[in-house]
Image 1: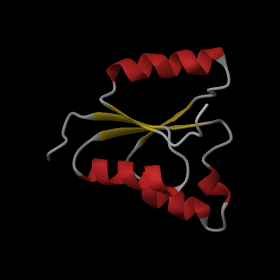
Image 2: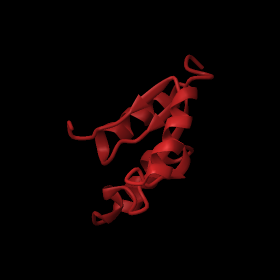
Image 3: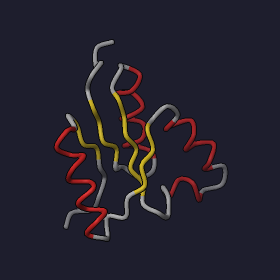
Image 4: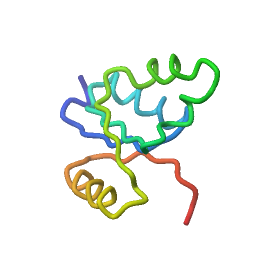
Length: 92
C-alpha cells in the first residue's frame, strides 16, 4: 500500500477528520484515534455509535485528557513519532 509505515495521530472530532483518517488508513497508514475521556461527540448523536465504529474501525484507540498536564505530556511523546497529525480544534 502507498502509505505503509506512515503513522497518523487522529485528534479530530465528528466527521471531516474521521473521514480523512479513514482514507489514509485505506491506503495503509497506521492510525491512532485519540479521544477525550468524554468520547467523540459523534457517539452522542442518534445512531452515533454505528457511525463512530464505521469511521474508526481498525484504528488504535487511545484516551487522553488533554486538559491535564499528564495527558498533554503523553500526547507530546506520541507526536514525536508521528508522521501526520489530524485535528479540528478551534484556534486558540
